[in-house]
Every structure is written in structure tokens, then in C-alpha cells.
Image (tube, rainbow, N blue to C red; front, side, top):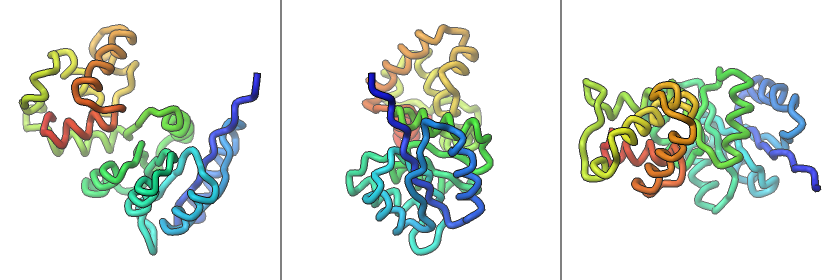
Length: 218
């Protein structure tokens, strides 16, 4: 049986201190390999073509080309690299712009190292993750004062329980947290999420949350 290849990670940030911190954290794990680093978006695009990383840790605010524009260019070029946005800012516009640019996950820079590693691995596996503070920004913008979902034709296709699950997905809850909140089994949670994806015609949690936002489902 062949040994599983490590996850190739490219670090993009204009702060040398941040890069050192990320490298120190990630190098503790044998299943993660840092293949390169870049200090601006343009170099990140070139590094992506050269190293073909599995995952890119992308800072938003950088000189020459910011992380949002770099993400758009990398995705436009057809790269299969998964992109995790890292930022120290929680501005609403940055959050929405980053997600619409094609970022797969979104973390604050002060995220716990163990969580960051888990996000890298889960994003590599095809999942999407939103920092709870980021999810709250998205949710607060599109939920009415009572915190209820706005009604629409698409929403009417979802069952009441699926609406509950989608609400928690938009808040950044994990499957286990959804299970605990709604007092249902993990298998039931997975079934609801599968049905939500089919009805909304999306492939992952971030797309589900963003489509709900765009169509004013939340």
C-alpha cells in the first residue's frame, strides 16, 4: 500500500512574522509540506503555477496585488488549488468579496493553530470552513431583525428541519454542533445537508450559505 502524500501548502503573506508563525505551526505535521511562500498576489499566482500546491493560505491585504484579486486570477486560470483566506480584519466587504472570488475557506489570523491545521486538512479534502466570526458577518447582513429566514420560492422547497440545518451551516456550525443543537443524529444531519445541496444545486457548505445569501434565503 503506497504511503499517502503530504498536503502541499503555499503560504502567501506580506508579513515575514506571519509566514514564520505559519511555517512553525505547519512544520509540526508530517502530512503537511510547505512547498513555497510569496509576499504579494502576483508572486502567489506565479508560485501556484510553479509549485501546484494543494492548499494556499492567502492573506487578503498585500501590496501590488491583494489576496482577493490573486484568488480570482488563480481560480480563473483553472487551478485545482484550494484557497484559505487569512485575515486580521473582519470587514463585511472583504468577507463577501473573498467568498465571491472563490475562496474555499475563511479564517481569522488569530485562529487557534490546531484549528488552522484542521481547516487545512478539511479544505484539502473538499470541505469549506468559515470562521464563526466571519459566518456571523454574513448572517447578520442578510437576516432580518428577528433572525428568521426571508421567504422565497427556493426556500419553500426546503423542509422546516432543512431550514434549521441551513441556518446553522450559515453560522459556521460543524455537523456535530448541528447534531447537538437540533438533537438529531450525525447521520440525519448528513442526510439533511445532502438534501439541501441537491435542492439548492450547490456542492459544499460555503456555496450553500452564499446561495442562500444571494437569493435572500437568509
